[in-house]
Amino acid sequence: MATLLSALPVGSYVFIHHLVATDDPSVAAAQAELQQGTGRGQFRPIARIESFFHGLEMVEPGVVTASEWRPEPDTPRAADHPVLRLAAVGLGRKP
Image 1 (tube, rainbow, N blue to C red):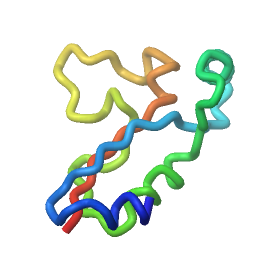
Image 2 (image 1 turned 180 degrees about the horizontal axis):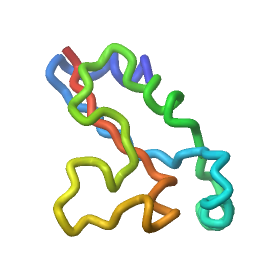
Image 3 (image 1 turned 90 degrees about the vertical axis):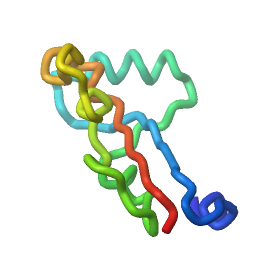
Image 4 (image 1 turned 120 degrees about the vertical axis):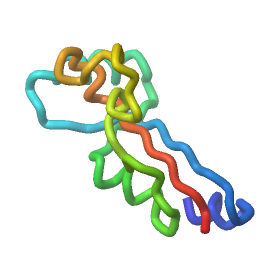
């Protein structure tokens, strides 16, 4: 990430959409299916995903599950769909 960020001009934005590793048994089956389907996909804990934004100014709401990123009123909730708990997004700006 440091190499990528150093090549970006000041004011650039970095968007990351990443698979989330979790020990939550209620999403274990969905995680296993996603892992099998993506093949090379890497699941990481939210804290590790947040570390990719080191040195950037985070845009609110920070790194959250995809369904929590500025949801519209009819956006499906992660609590209702286990697979939605397995994707996190974040947006940061290079100062």
